Length: 105
Image (cartoon, rainbow, N blue to C red):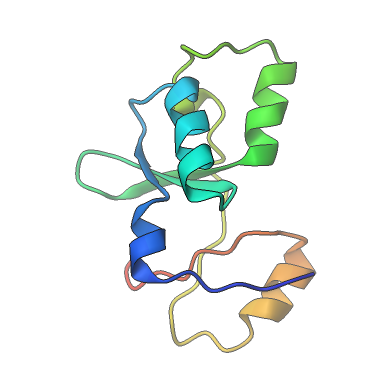
């Protein structure tokens, strides 16, 4: 398992409104190449996370490009704060590939 920290500029490229559609999510994945999107509401509060795996599972459920992201959004996600030292252990233990490190959550 490889671990990559993302700078603030790249982090901002992962944000997408819960009102957007799957086609917008695919466009975001093409631009940021991080295979993750943080789904936010109008107040920029995280509502969930969507990974490329969530997208593939949505397609297998016959969702289409006009389906809203909140239909495939994972609302049971993990985050940690910047003071967390053992984030790698958490990722291994929880068997997750993406773990946002957020100042506020």
